[in-house]
Length: 477
Image 1 (cartoon, rainbow, N blue to C red):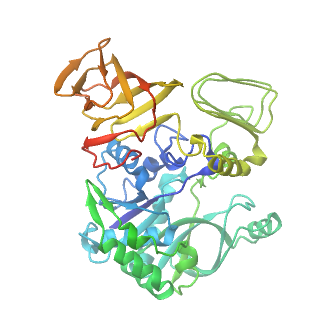
Image 2 (spheres, rainbow, N blue to C red):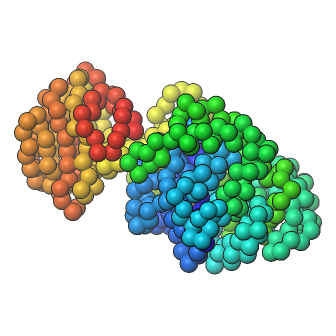
Image 3 (spheres, rainbow, N blue to C red):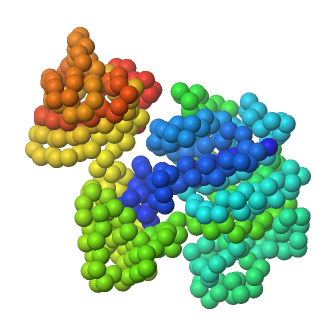
């Protein structure tokens, strides 16, 4: 038996405008009904895996929890990183969590960990599971296993692993190679001795921590101290920010795998993609007879080899070849497919300009549901609130705005000052400035409310919370 450690960090900036800082690609359903995170969890079914350890950004905690709840998966632990420090510290935190409280059967004293990024696509699940079973023996024996993807083409966007002498189900690692130029990538492909670096690993928890302490002692010390002083917040393990802030940032490859004498690589031929760009997503998706991949309300004429995505309205394309067109409620991206790596430059400019499109979609998700900003102007804003069955907003008040609520679907239990009332479809109420209020959905169907805000200031930080079942503090969590 082994314990999965699913690393759910990263921003996926190259997949903007679908992927954003507060709603990154691992939480998106890009290739089917399930999100990449959910696919990562589901492909473990049938393996001797215990409940997973999730390591994620604090800002994504409720989205991650909701997506696991939809699968009826209760994780062994959900570790909240206050800051991103790359993969080596994240995996160290996951190892400490796996060692705490057992969770891996007979291996509870020193569980084998299967480390998986949450944002990869794997098409052949049986082949993936076969590779995991093949790697298990080496990991149980104390080796540090990485999985090398059998290269399908001369990709210069991936790091490479050169294999050495055979070792059990895999090979000793001769060396790791940074992303090569196209000519070297072609040489690697022709040699047959190089694999793409997948970023997936398997080893015992204590073995990894021992090697981390040997090669990156300051990182190991800080991770141990930060986990030791972690606090429990609902179902989350909140890492101590003051301690963790000083942790060096480094990848597991640099910190451990390139230095240890016990690294082996197990080949992986599973239809793998890191979905690192729109071009990669196009390649990983099923195309039509013209080489187009279309999602949503899309109409195309004389268009070939393109990726067309519509979220909220008709997208019509004429005469395009090898292009990407992505439409969301608040942004549209148009780019040649061979320039999509430069999308990250646009995202950086959005960040520098302080644009909300850098981090948020127009529809913003909260632990109770979501809200969509439909219209705004001087001194007013219109939103559509969706409240999940059984969910409730915090008991709160605003200093600068009043709110008018109209129920358009479902039943709402409203706290309005000292008054509690039930509102059905087409009924409404008014919340004056400074009055305590709350919305609850007591039903089994989603509740939808149109909210009209009016006042001198309509920012999301004009919230004073008195009670909150989700343990939130501030205004943006």
